[in-house]
Image 1: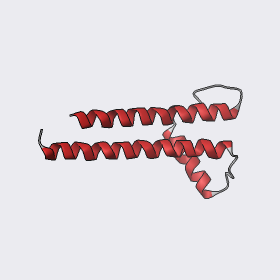
Image 2: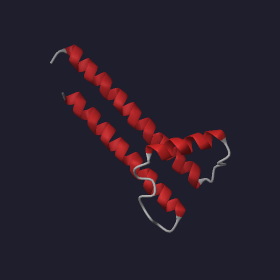
Image 3: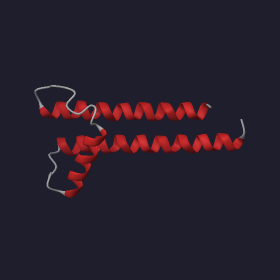
Length: 97
């Protein structure tokens, strides 16, 4: 393997990790804002909620706990963990190639 190929795959892996980390950060930030009862009329809170709902569209309301906070933590938290797991796993796989 050439050093140029290794450098390219390393750069791509780093980008994938950053994207996965940012996605997980947004989801975690929304969980924190929800638990701290952030003002939903605030533009930042509205943006984070919208981005988190889009990122967790597949896991949003996946769980049917009676408590709303438990649904938010589990639904959005699952999405964050999956993005981290897949993103870092894919990046590690790319680095080995």
